[in-house]
Image 1 (cartoon, rainbow over the protein chains, first blue to last red):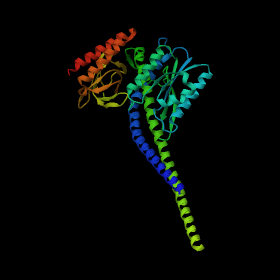
Image 2 (cartoon, each protein chain N blue to C red):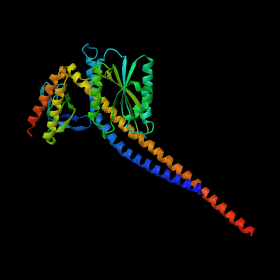
Image 3 (cartoon, each protein chain N blue to C red):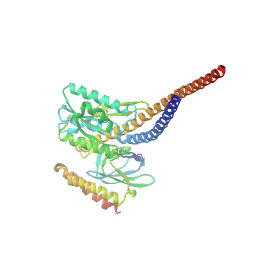
Image 4 (cartoon, one colour):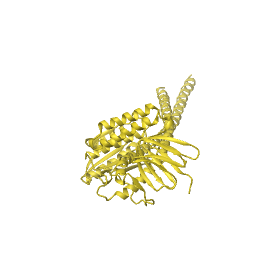
Length: 289
Length: 132
């Protein structure tokens, strides 16, 4: 019976799909651990950096000679959205959730009459935004060859941002990425990096001597601050991607399992039905004699 | 007076060292200085150079390429862009750092060419200082 053979083929195909999703899940689990470690080991630097920057910027803010990276360019007409997504798909809602947030922000800014420009990091976000916002793309950073995101990658992105900022191409830059909460929850986040937005309500407990003076230090540190924020975002994104993929693949594996069970039941039933039919035919034939 | 202070050396990618230190010799942008317990609070940028940490049981040299140091009465945190334990650094690595500084200098915008020249000179001085 052809039907039985079809069913058998389908079961075999779902089984091999399950093997693949299971393998991907395990690979992601291993990568997740590494990504989490990387995110964690980057934390002390970022925290210290932010603390120092917050103190510094609080004391310099308001001064007329404050660096442009901190004070801004004096207008907020042109916004640059840096959309950080993954290079690969098959990770659940990971890419879409970032893209959705970016899209909302872009629409809102446009409604306010602002000009937007978009810089994408990672192929997937670019693909998803292309149709609607393709004309706003100014650049793309490809990280598909990068096995492990290093500080130099973040520095390269920060360098590009700062060069463009100095050339007056935009006034405000915001990065979009997923903050890692847990394996099942990643929070799409937007964060303004230029002009630097450090919390100014930090109570500065110690009065520091600065060498060279505050503004020179700031001018030196601000580009590093941007790079650090981007690096943190990249690491968070990396961990989130693996987490999202792991849970997506876990779901896929479970669904494949359920499907196999259902198909097996159908297969057994139809086989039994076929046997019964055959038996009835034989008995009917014997009675007729 | 406390005998030691907390010393941390972190790079963006990981924490390189952490522990008690008796004194830390820091290559500051405006000149070398030594931080000891009860030092006045200070934040200084670094130039490429050698950072020496004297802890109660050993003295370790690190090669740093830049970053900044935060000194308080009971701790020193050094946030370095790139840092290596001095004895792991090879001539190759120094050559590479000097080469990249040279490249930056060659391409530098007129307004920052002095800074780039200083960076290059510091890198070269670091290389010769290492006596590899």
